[in-house]
Amino acid sequence: MNSKELEEKIIRHYQGEEKMMILVFAQWCVNHDLDPEEVYLRAYPHQSSNPALREAIELTVPKEEAGEIADETLLGVLSLFGNDDLAFIVTEEIQKRK
Image 1 (cartoon, rainbow, N blue to C red):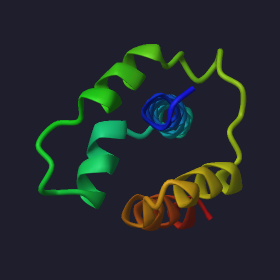
Image 2: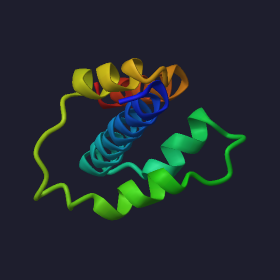
Image 3: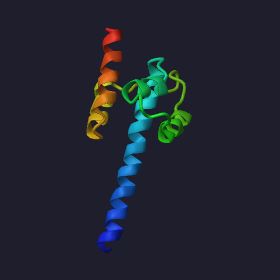
Image 4: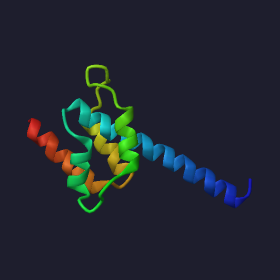
């Protein structure tokens, strides 16, 4: 495998992991009766639309069918991908529940 192929493989892997992070975020929102797009836009108000988020929302299930996603798990995943602004908004939502 040459360096270009390796680079492409790493990028595909990262993109797959990023999609999983977005799905975890979207499902967490559904589980807590939050609109994922609204929460996302509070963190990133200058982004009009996020196709990956829309795709993830389509893959979510009703909260009655979903497994629990711990707040700490979501915050950890967001941190891994450098989504500090989104983690801040999620933290605000967590504080509202307490």
